[in-house]
Image (cartoon, rainbow, N blue to C red; front, side, top):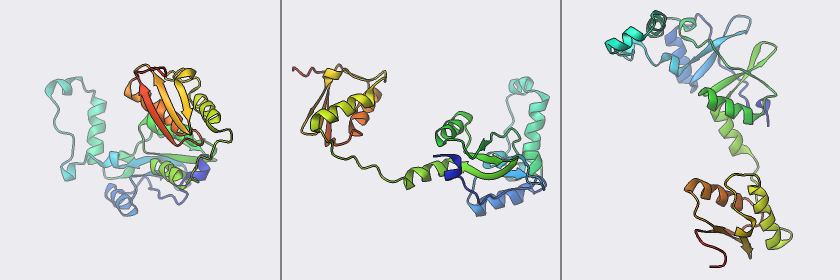
Length: 227
């Protein structure tokens, strides 16, 4: 699955000369938390988001006076930029210009990693220098919801096949348990071995639960199959 499969194509944009108040109203009534800023030719100039409009002098949400020592270490440029964000009247003065973009062929796995790493909620999708869509975190969640459910099917070879599938799911993982510690009886996977941490135990359980034909998973960590 790629960006073109999940992106929003009915894009709401802002112009650089749109007022801050109008931009805020557009986002509120459209139910969005950010939008691309484009020029008359459709070229991307930046993004304006709720974060860019959080600290505003007119509603009393400007950044509070810093401690004197923070004022001393803050550069003049930082203080000037803060003032502009709080008092500017047009989008071009408050928008974020360092915008990360993707193409339509970008895999959704890469998009999710990008949103997490950059700590952003949406990313414009570009084609020939123009915005053709936007992928947001909600688009990724919708993709998960609309995927056809994967219903495990019964294993053709019974318990042996289930055991092999469980071991294959854990193969190469640092938290995997030894082969002899996975025993399957009548579709129930029994996990044995030394005590493991909660996160490792959850990973082992999930790997077992996702194997086709599994009826239940029982953990016996801290015990040996011979006990």
